[in-house]
Image 1 (cartoon, rainbow, N blue to C red):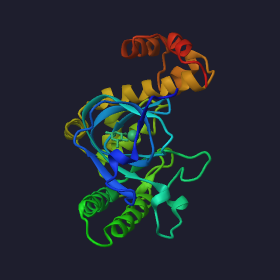
Image 2 (cartoon, rainbow, N blue to C red; image 1 turned 180 degrees about the vertical axis):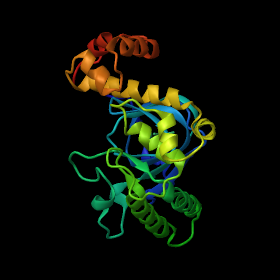
Image 3 (cartoon, rainbow, N blue to C red; image 1 turned 180 degrees about the horizontal axis):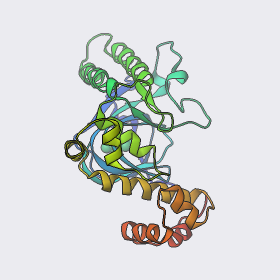
Amino acid sequence: MTSQLILRKSDFFSSSEQAVNVAERYPQDVFAEHTHEFCELVIVWRGNGLHVLNDRPYRITRGDLFYIRAQDCHSYTSVNDLVLQNVIYCPERLKLNLDWKALIPGFEEGLFQPYWRLGSGGMNPVRQIITQIEQESRSAGAFSFSLTESLFAQLLITLHRYRFAVDSGPVTSSETLLDKLITALVGNLERTFVLEQFCHENQCNERALRQQFRQQTGMSVNNYLRQLRICHAQYLLRHTDYMISEVATRCGFEDSNYFSVVFTRETQMTPSQWRQRHPIT
Ligand code: RM4
Ligand code: NI
């Protein structure tokens, strides 16, 4: 899909020397499909929304991390108290002699993983560095741009240290229960998920965890899980030729009829209609 909207460097950076800047979104509103003349890191702190990245839908919430390249096309819809930070940067303006490609997935041509989760341990350090970048990028002092760039490098290294791919699980076991729960939900789409069992295994109070989840993400655990499954179904319908029943199973629905009912209710289209309207790419 081609998008008309291209966000310009001149609107988001203070000068042609500035390599890094922060566009905080408290909250992030709906935002039409666009590409950019710059790249961005997206770190989601709370609330939820639908992030469509290169035609793939992601129901995003706390701890989600995306590496977006300039040419990537994305949009935000159905947002609900969505709080995130965009750290935007122009690769060609970076001056420090660092191995940027080892730190930034997609920095060079080729297949890469744009979507990661940020472990709880990394949240405070990341927040602090972004605050420093915000302050420094507003300052006009000598070496401000260099300082901002070195903070950006720190941010990338910190993200690198604490991030993990959803299918590989956290790097450390110090996840808070809430983040552990979110990761367990995202990583278990093919199976049925029983919260009671999760709470039993982690020896925590189910009611309290549900409450905390709702407070931080703006949705219920069940609703989030349903949205994740539907997003995954949309992805599979579009990018594979699995039969509908196979899609249902891979999205954690034991009963393919029930899957169709839920899918249709959520998207106003049956799975086959969805597939027809969004041909395999
Ligand atoms: C928008 C939206 C976009 C980002 C710009 C800088 O609010 O978050 O993704 O490219 O800001
Ligand atoms: Ni963008």
